[in-house]
Image (cartoon, rainbow, N blue to C red; front, top):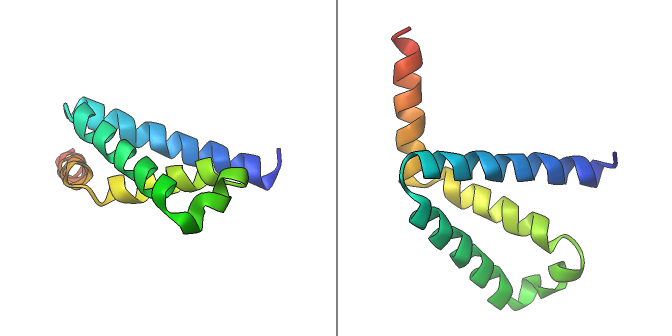
Amino acid sequence: MTKKQALEEIVSQKVNELKKIFEECGEEMEWKAMKTNVYEEMSNNRETKWLKSLDWNLKLKEKLISLAESHDVIQQFTTLNNEFTKGE
């Protein structure tokens, strides 16, 4: 497995993990909206058009991860998860 393939696998797993959290929190529509916004932003950005022929899909997923991790849903999920594990 090449470094690029390994990175793509890790990034894809992270995207799936974040998507699952949004779904478990009942925020499927918010996930879809973020995904659409990231796609449109990158598609419309002239500076990133060259990425389509290179690593555009990977960059799209990385940007989605960054946006999702800073979202309130993930912040609340992390806080609740941390509080739960402290109580054990």
